[in-house]
Length: 258
Image 1 (cartoon, rainbow, N blue to C red):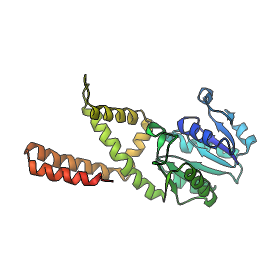
Image 2: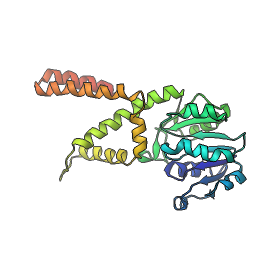
Image 3: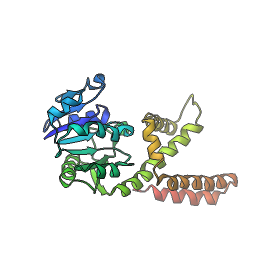
Image 4: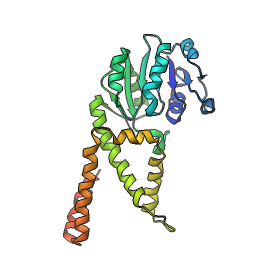
């Protein structure tokens, strides 16, 4: 299959490497320097090259802020039968866009990301495939993710956004709170260092991505739970309530059991 990847960032390069031995690959990237470490694929910097390549599948791997604009830019150069796809962690506006386009599409979310995951060992990582969209497109990604050993879940666009609100917004906001109140430690403990590593990784993400995850319409209720829990914990601390602390620790330990 002829596959075009939009964007030569971490995830775009990952998909290029992953697919290059079984498919004819090309990448479209306006910044030539970002294509220095891509190989076994054709490198495009102009739209006319895309039309000549005539891809059968497009994988949009640009920054979430530019996902829809990137589609709009290249679609006039794609054949009617070409399937368009995204791997965005935020699906805001994508369902409406796909339906307006009238094109075959597939939407997925590899939840491992490049920040923390070992891209060579993904058996403990997850991927979401959106139920709406082209059947053959979904089969392509299901087969691909299965070969990687990923745990695959199939959700609607709405179910995906609810899941992301829980699985990303709570860890992100918790990390923001840690970073907001932390002070430099000359001799940091192990727990502090681990939290610091997570904080640096999260805060290295694109600002727009963080914004869109937190502006997800389902995020507010999740974050409000943090406020409630902090209020309860602060009351236990203020009253030096040993029994209350014991019960609280038992409750939260039950949440993190395997």
